[in-house]
Image (cartoon, rainbow, N blue to C red; front, top):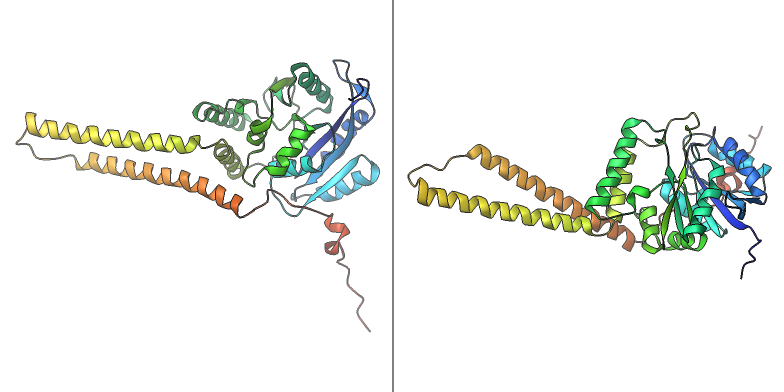
Length: 337
């Protein structure tokens, strides 16, 4: 049984894509927490390691990570073989962690490390294995992205009955054994927060104030945000397929009603009239074919996810620091005279 006076050991996971300018400041803010401290609720805690997961971004993040590792023994670098994305990078960090608790946070400085104690207090007060940061202010991403994010989460929560969707946030605290278990079995197309919801016990939120991003452009663009949204849809179970089935049933009923209406009108009210309405017929046909193709596309996406899982596509692959291996030996022998 753990001594009540021993600090709660925390591993901090930071996926790194464009952290060249922001990582040093973030690590400096985390440094005081690597010494025993107390939460606002007077509970002892310590950040025993910070794992920087290099996800092959476009800047000099790799160099900064190496410098931070050399300067601070509690900083560790996790090197992925290529760019996998934020969620797989986070899973790779979870799999490599050793703390009783795991905290995930962004590299851009909008998450304040001083809020970690509040997340831990909420977890212990509510006996929750996952705690999401609940922003008390608008995220610093711009109006349209914020509206799209809230709208997509609301839509999935209502349409697919994924009740915890609105709580999803990249600033989260997870029980260590839960996070490492999720990292062990998640497939390549799994959405991290959906996967956490499969096995987590109680899920709670803790209020935090988000800060401005550290003076760099967001790594997300329209295509990646749409991919993010679609992965969340596909990971939310088979309710999407049920919606497709309901859509097909509605169109079948609508077709029968239309046929019955035409037969009744022709047989009882205007038997001498010509059959007209080619324009409306074409609209109905095009709309029906469009709905059918959309339904087939949704089914194909689900099949694709299962094919990738069956083929063993990994969500991430951890390698050694490329600069310390064969790829780092780029020097040439001197030319012979």
